[in-house]
Picture 1: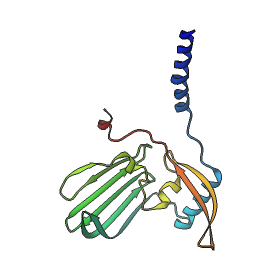
Picture 2: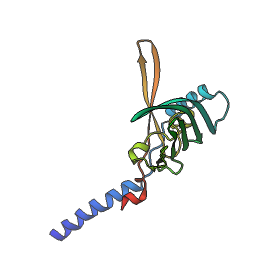
Picture 3: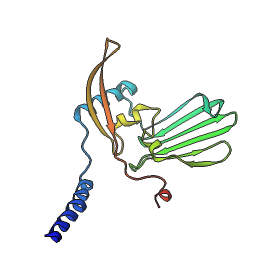
Picture 4: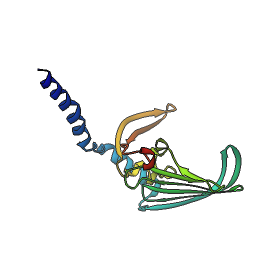
Length: 176
């Protein structure tokens, strides 16, 4: 009887998790997709947007205060680059989520560089332009409708949330 119990135990704890991982991710809520499309249309009109470049001034507060200009670029829903031309030099941050695996790298003015911790890449790669962010339901994004809520006693808004599965940790060298 103990052999049967052991086999049953192994079958449950080895096969059930495998079945859970082979199931596909849930589909987005149609109502959430409709509200997301309305939001994007309100931001962009009838123009289809596939990339964007934004420029402006910036104050960087990373240890010491520094000022300069910012250029934020996005290509589709999964790639972005932020270049800050500061008085101390250029700081660049690159994000890539095209494959569904969120990646990030930074380059500092002193020519050092590194990868973002994986949890710091869980936000949208195109965080600065919502029409190309999660509202656009990029790779592996599931949109859900939460409901209506009242803000400041007068403004009714519809709330959406998005989820994205965590596929692996970046960079791969850290997984060994």
